[in-house]
Amino acid sequence: MVVFYHYIGVPNAKIGHQGRSEALAWGTSAANIFPHSLHQAATFGWTGVELFFMISGFVICMSGWGRRPADFFVSRVVRLVPAYWTATLLTAAVLMAFPKLTSGINPSMVLTNFTMVQSAYGIANLVPAYWTLFVELTFYLLFGLVAIGGVTYRRMVTFCVLWSVASIPAANSHNPVLNMIINPPYSPFFIAGIAFFLIYKFGSNLLLWAIVAYSWLIAVNQPHTSPPPQVVILISAFFVIMAVVATHHLDRVSWRWLTVAGALTYPLYLIHQDIGFTVFAYLRGSVPPLLLAVLTYLTMLAAAWVIHRAVERPVAPLLKARLSEAVSRVRLSGPRQPAAAAAGAAMAAGAAMAGGPAMAGGPAMAGGPVPNGHSAGATANGHGPNGYGPNGHGPNGHGPNGHGPNGRGPNTAVANGAAPTGAAASGRAANDTAMDESGANGSGGGPDGGAHGSEPVRNGSAHGGAGGTGHAGRAHGGHPPGQRVGAGHGIATHGASGRPGAVPTGVGANGSSGAGRD
Image 1: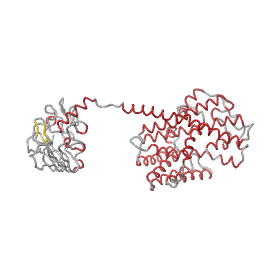
Image 2: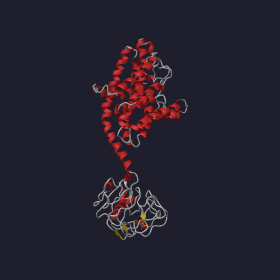
Image 3: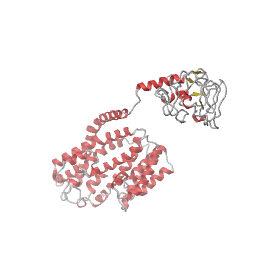
Image 4: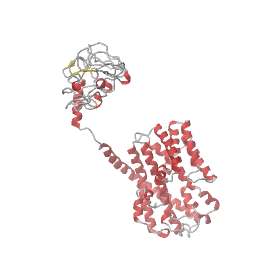
């Protein structure tokens, strides 16, 4: 549609900012050389851009699903850059070799056009049709930001609603930065495409169809207000076609040809305008206009196929592999815990969780209560701010000889969902459910820390063996084996001493401590 518009529908076809006003591709207005009905039909071909944006919303949401933002970035670079750079070089070479319609090509302008963001810096597009690429890039930016953390149904619905709302004040803000990012004239098409994909993937519901309907109501007057009826009909037809696709009514139709057409559409769009106009300027006196337009279109289509086969297909895998490798290095270059410290933490945690000596060290420094009942102060080998020290527990309170996955130890029987990070970490069971512990992993206590007692535990009751000091000078209050204790809801009580059978004072109704808790 866009090629049809440029070749036959544009009244005064010329090479955009690089063309001289008196140098028209056809030497006169297209209305003077083509049949009136054909020219009139072609004048509405610009709406193909709106259809393209809607398809882009659908396809980008589909291709980004299940991918990390970095992978989405790689896929977009691989899809856009090889053909774009090839088309930019080819167009610049043609315009310099056949300058009949140009007023000169500025090399610096060509170089900046390789970035695709030349419009943001006030640099002219080498090819006027390149303006749509910057609109696409802003959409990719917004989508990529929303995709951080994963593309989900909730995120996409929220994105559609917030973008629609943000477009309202941006439409009349006259703020160029806001308009560039939010892009009110074209946001309804991208939003509708995303909503159509959600319908395609998850099925219809009132909210998604409301998003589509709202986008259509705005789109029929965008990007030009008060459009002729033909434009309203065409844009409405685009919405109907997308709705048919989204509701799976075309699933049984074979679309093998569409894969090839989709692959050629992008390079064709990139090269057709200025190169085609140059062909018209040099051959318009030798070939009838309509035939020349058709032959030029077929030539551009063949050139697009060559770009796809000779550039995109061989370059894309190599570029993807190199970019993926580079992105992986960035991802792995973040701060990591030193191996020695991690190993020491795991060994210390294993000793403590298995019932052996706890972390060595004198009494903890006074510092007031902290979330798990441990003092905020620390000795050299004592607890840190969260009760864990450099030689204490490993990740989630598990050590190599301590609890295994889901809080289970080698000799520990767990019922009803013991705490995922180990009962010893805070004495709190997941979802306040009961848990039973028995066996070698909880009998008695050692001189430097109580182990889990062999008593049954209910509702997060305190547990611990008889013994001396616990973590950094604390001991878990112990109870005689087999005795049921504590009625708290998930918070372990910590005693100041390890006397067997002693329950720390000040335990409240919900297991919270009073005067007896440090």
